[in-house]
Length: 444
Image (cartoon, rainbow, N blue to C red):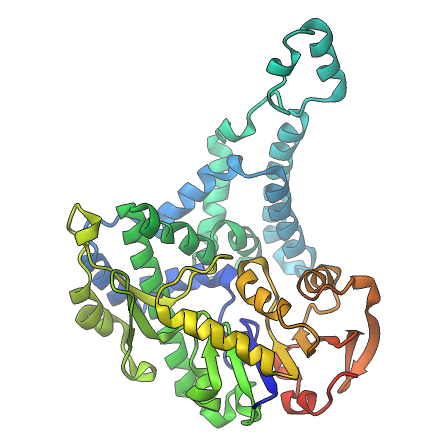
C-alpha cells in the first residue's frame, strides 16, 4: 500500500515555464486563440453546429445586461477586485487607474440605490400604524424598489462592454481582467450551459458543445506548445516529483501522467485525452493526445458523431470533451467517473501523508473537499501562496474543522508555515517547494 499521496490543483500549471492561465482569465485566452491560431477550430465547430448563435462578444452584452440582477454583495465583491487590481499599478499606468476609478464610482452608485431601497424600521412602523389590519400583506418585501428589474443606462452599459472587450484583446488590462474574472468566467459559463442537457434546451446544448470543444482545443494546443519547448525531465515542478507516490490531479493536462505513469495518477475532473458520447455515456480515447491537431480531430472524429439537426433532442447525438464541469454536485458523464471517484477516496484513505499543491479548496470543488473531510486524521501539507491569509484559513476550517485561531507559526523546509494538529499551511508557490523533502518530514 502506498501511504504517500500528492494532490495538485490549477496553481501548479501556473508555474513559470508552463504558464497555463487560471479559470478567471481563461475565457480571454480561448477567445484570442479562436481568432488567431485556432481559427480553423472555430470554423469546424460552427459548421458542425448549424444555427449556433453564440459568440464571446454577444456573451459580454448578456453579462452586462444581468449586472443589475446581481445581489449587492456580489456587486461589492466585483468592486473590491477592481480596487485590488489598481492598488499597486505603476506610475505609468495612470490611465488604467482612472479607468478603474470610473468603474468603482458607477458600481457604488448602483449599490447606493440598492441599499437605500430597503425598508427601514421607521418606514415599516408607519405602514403598520396607517394600515394596521393589512400591514402583513403590504410588507411582502424588504424593499420598496425591485432592484433586479431595473435596467442600466446606455452610459453604464457601454462603459462596461468596452471594458470587458479590452479583456478579450491581446493586451493585458488590469481593470478588464478584474471585472472579467467574475463576469466572464468560463467555468461559470460551462455550468450554466451544461444544464441544457438536463432541461433539454437545444440552444444551451449547442453552446456547451461549442464552448467545451473550444476550451479543449485551446488546452491541447497550449499543452503541445509547452511540451515542444520543455522535456519531461526538465518540466517545471513535475520534473522534480518523486516517482514513488500516488497522485490525484484536478487539472486536465497530461504533465503529471507523463511523469508518474497512468497507474499512479487519477484525473478527478477528467482529462484532455478522452471524450464522452452523452446518450450512451461511453468514454472514448483521443489517440496520441500530445500530437493531436485539435481542428483535425474535431473535423474527422467529433463532427461525424454530432447531430443537432433533429427537433426531437432524443434523436440528436452529442459528444463532449471529458472535462467535468465545476459543479458542487458532480454530473456523471460516464460510469467510469463513479469508479474513479471511489478509487480517489480509497487512495486518500490509504495515505498517511498527503501533500496538496496549488489547490485553493474553493466551493466549486465541494465534492472533492468532501472526500478529504471523510478521511480525517491524516498528515496534510498544503502549499499555496495565500496559505497564511484569513480567507484561506477560513476555507481550511470548513474542510478540516480546525478553527483558524488554533494555527501556530512554524518553519517547514525553510518556508514560513502555519500548523494546527496534523495540518500545515505553507505559503509558497509550487516551484518553490521540494515535494520529496515534504514527504520525508511528516508533521508531528
